[in-house]
Amino acid sequence: MALLRRKRKDPPPLEEADVYARSYGERSDDVTIVKPVLHEEPAAPEAEPRLSDRKIRDAFRARLDRRDPS
Picture 1: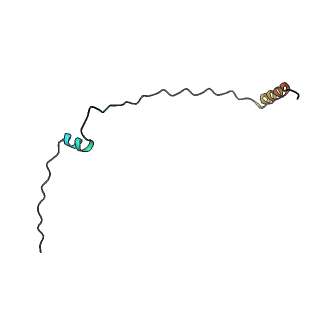
Picture 2: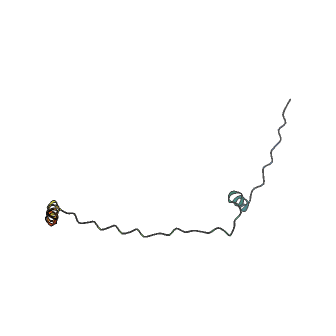
Picture 3: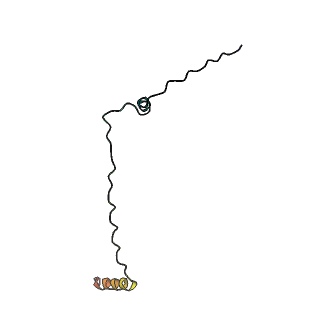
């Protein structure tokens, strides 16, 4: 038994509006365009001055001297 093949008809070309509607749905007025707000970068915090070993030792001794003798 031989199968008969029919020649397929090409679909008609789609209009741009039809393609858009099929891809994204119908356009509505509910759509809001949002633009990003560019913020300025915060300024880098100022570096704390580094203490030398001598200053740290002196500050510790001064703190010990201020403590109560109890």
